[in-house]
Image 1 (cartoon, one colour):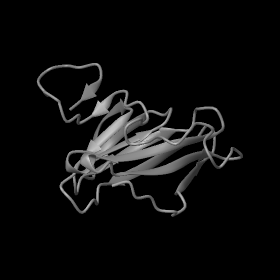
Image 2: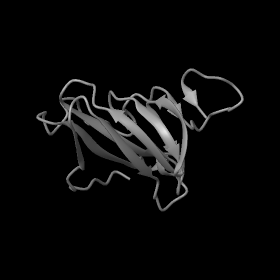
Image 3: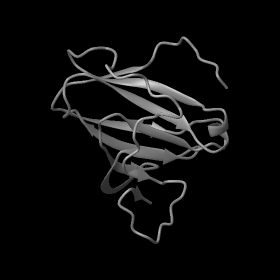
Length: 145
């Protein structure tokens, strides 16, 4: 919609060399799917809706309202700050709905050196879990169903 808030961004601080488990809960109050991507990091999916799954590495997770995904992020990149981007898709894509946060390494800067991603120029998606254009009976290098 072109509106921005001045709310401070959430910062998740990680210690280099450690692994962190995150639980993403899609609590959007709409029918829009949400796309989560963390700049420069792989997400190892370990559970969906509280049920363990065979671990799978992805770069982006697309979820629908009410879904929960547990994933692990390894703090194995250069000490710094990285963007976390959540984009609304479907009907929310028309309004360019997005939210940003920061993944920060301990003793690193509080703000990424790269420019903040925009809705249209976001973080590269890489391998996507649940892509909207998925045909799940075909194997794709860029998608996991």
